[in-house]
Image 1 (tube, rainbow, N blue to C red):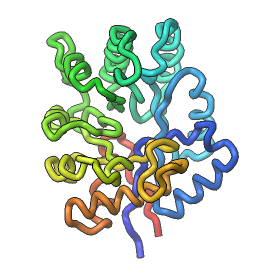
Image 2 (tube, rainbow, N blue to C red; image 1 turned 90 degrees about the vertical axis):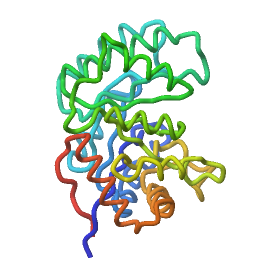
Image 3 (spheres, rainbow, N blue to C red; image 1 turned 180 degrees about the horizontal axis):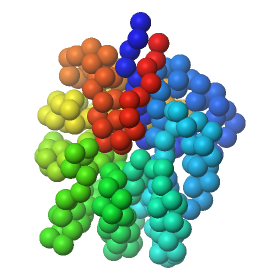
Image 4 (cartoon, rainbow, N blue to C red; image 1 turned 60 degrees about the vertical axis):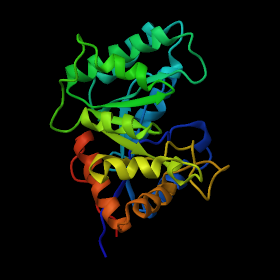
Length: 271
């Protein structure tokens, strides 16, 4: 029986946590029906590993390019210069992962905002979607995106991008989808006290994509272990349960959403 492929829209497959068994991790993902894996960039040091994986597995692995907000430091202007050169060389499906993170440290908020603003500008120039990291920073990101000199006026057909690992409120979710963004739903939806089931119900399947954020945030029953892309099946089942639909429906719809926003063409089918 043929079924629609699942796309892991956010996985750090190049991370050191996968050094010992990366090929096996990829094989397990393919066996689980995860036929496309999208890799976000973090900083200048992660570029090499990301590009190597994309070149080795062009059918199944796609890359983004950007500077993670937690990597915005004293030399972020130099880092942005390097990342811009790589991004503008072409071949990437999005600018990401970019955004703001005020959970650990608010002392670099201004620098994070400038880096975010700069990279969204690149996305507008290139007609690419963005992949947004947002932790304790929704209002700050909202302010940046809605600035009168910086309107959300690009890439309307495919969508503006994805709020990665969305954990915001129903009101924030509705604002994001009204602006043309999709919500990345990962392992957090399987956690006992998660409010994401209500968020998912409030926006519906047309505005969702699936992700793992591997090796981070493993779903139940894998909490405490290293996350990997094959575990996205647990996210798929939980979203289906929340919405009262078959898992195949969630797989087909979220895959179509990911294909549309990332412009990656038809994903292969898994047997």
